[in-house]
Image (tube, rainbow, N blue to C red; front, side, top):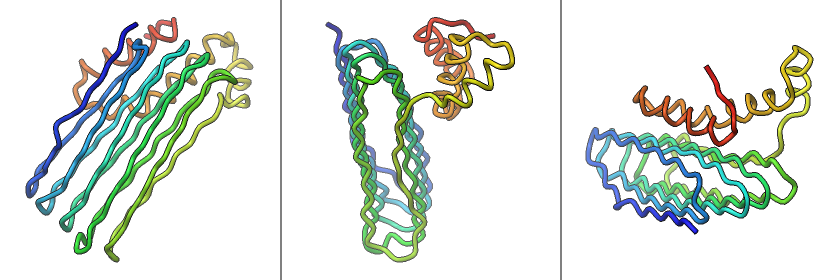
Length: 201
């Protein structure tokens, strides 16, 4: 049974620094990732995103802590997951805005697409704000494929299996689009398509 564990070193961002990270998880019976990011210099920015594709009884666990300690910093976190059979995804994400960290702009979102009744997504987004001049938000969603969208595609002659794959790919694609390196992004798109068992031009 394959296991994957990734504990990123704590990241401290100095003034005007930029940090981008993306994680892609699939295939392991157990995948765990932990990221701890601290803003220590004004004017810095970070974008942390990821995607996970799990089936069978595979499990993906992501823990993320972003701490804004100084003013005028920006953080963005987006994670998208697809769970089939009895797979389980866990997301724990927290943004902390310390006293004095005015003009903070922090947003976090985690979402999962459940392809079976037995699949499970447990999400715990948290937001702690101790400053009064900030723009912050967080959220989490989970659900099944939109049957109306599926019907729309099928009504235009697209077979059901391909229509489902297109909708799943679009869901995951929102996270994959954040990868700036074109070659890497294309490789991740191909990997997700292979997981779906389809080919996209």
